[in-house]
Length: 191
Image 1 (cartoon, rainbow, N blue to C red):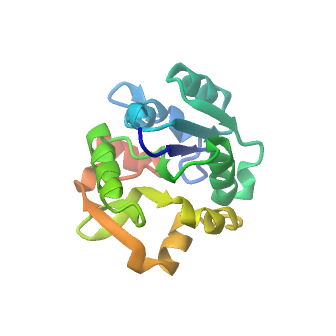
Image 2 (tube, rainbow, N blue to C red; image 1 turned 90 degrees about the vertical axis):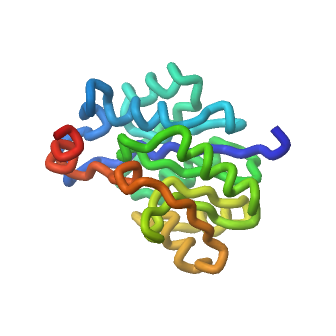
């Protein structure tokens, strides 16, 4: 691979709205975290860091051959997960950030997003539906200082808002961008 591209799977949240560890919740017989890791085209990345507070997610990350990164302070917000992930990746030219609660996201869509980024490597690339940005997102290294400077529960959206002219979107089916924040949302996907 000509360029070192890394991936951070963000799986450390407390899922307060879900009421329990939503990553263990199942859709069509597979946990949300398993489905998230299956959507990562690992062969496209130099390294994949799965940042989590859950020992069972760390075990699953290792089963996939990914780096398991322990987040001892999920209460510090998404900014801490981003920092841990970037630090675990080391020197990459870009990092793809995936959330772990989009159970219908497909590997093919992530791969297509990477192709878009490779065609415009100075840009931030994201999946979108109807022109509305979603996840995952790929950030070139020039944005890493801003990502590392984030605090509390401020995530990549904060950086994207500052650099709208540097954002390119790839249209994807709405269902792939649907995240599961509540048991009701999971029930709707299951029905």
